[in-house]
Image (cartoon, protein in one colour):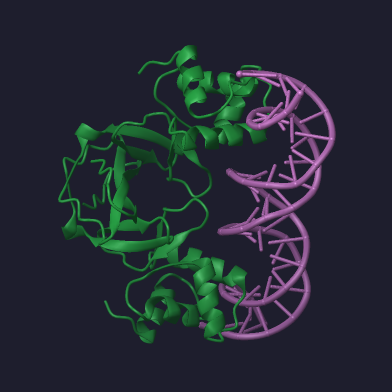
Length: 143
Length: 143
DNA sequence: ATTTGTGCAAATCGTTTGCATCTGA
DNA sequence: TCAGATGCAAACGATTTGCACAAAT
């Protein structure tokens, strides 16, 4: 679904969030340029560059609210900071360890078979697959 | 390979770490009861319970050193704390979100086919698969 | 008008580090 | 002996929060 300011307002409204200047402007930065991965610090730099008046606290709050509202997905890949992904579809990730950078793997580029039954009494919430890569040869290709 | 105090000393030596009381005692807690997952806080509680004189800083240092030495594997599953796994073999994880608990999935309980080629010039370091589960029905079974 | 969001600074929490003191080899 | 380890407390960095002010509905 393509980005538009109207759609963003709708999404905010559906999530019970009012359409403030900051949320609209951050939303445009986040969703206005195709699928991407970002963390709070990156978003803050972009906001500064775009002359959006917004505090760091509001950036954190906004990322959290957008995640809770299902507009972003948090990707756990780095113990030191939280990454968010605008791509909500089924897909996985390469993580470039030396660059702290995520790259999508489309779901059809990877197949998981024999997904084990979840333990009795539980149901699957999500399946996260992260393939960590580094520059250089000699993959130790576990799997 | 089974745990023994002698083997632990050897491993420490191979890693260039001296066999101090703290490292031996923590190593026994960590490796002496089969494969397990733990975080710093759990290990501290166990150390206190076992009357091992050790500071929290040393617990953190030890977990880090054991990881670097390849004796433990860090599992990125919770943004709030670091988990370590004594199981170094090929396997994946269920993460029980409500209990903050990891559970192993043996590699032969899960098959990944068509692992995509890593991006040009990079090689695969590891493949992490985490299946997040919750109590209750109605899996939204992505994948 | 009333609720909700924002900004700032302070608080939090897991983790790391500086440094003086011990201890294993 | 003496390089390396430990403990303590202070430092750290990402994230969250309390509260007074401002904006949204």
